[in-house]
Image 1 (cartoon, helix red, strand yellow):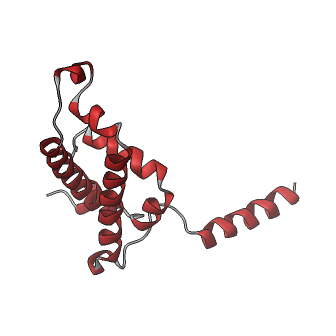
Image 2 (cartoon, rainbow, N blue to C red; image 1 turned 180 degrees about the horizontal axis):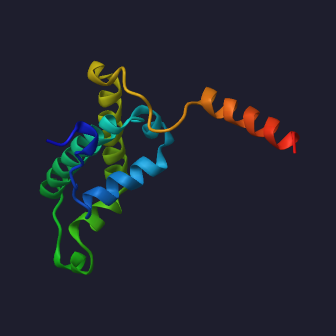
Image 3 (cartoon, rainbow, N blue to C red; image 1 turned 30 degrees about the vertical axis):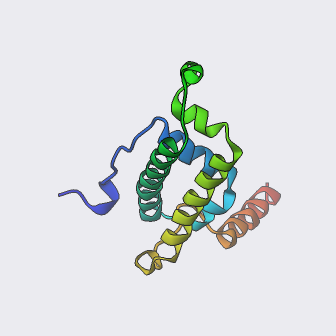
Length: 131
């Protein structure tokens, strides 16, 4: 049986995955909140679900007509700043909930922390100065 590090589920790509990825890229704090492999998996899973649910709710709340036929209903919804803000709040809430979950408290971050980066810089400076 594969270990937990080997399990990675392919998640949806369009359009929910793109929306979550854009929001994540626009908000660097989300990366800090979900900075471990298991947190990333949990974040993506629940963010995709909650963004999908929110988009579905918004679709039923807003009437679309035939003039919107040149774009998808998701694109039409995303033109509205209120919708984009609601989606951002939802994605951010997922990241905060995952970060607060005690099951992930002892996980190592995906990359080096600031102290490790500084130790490497000092080591590199020392090595380069010795040449």
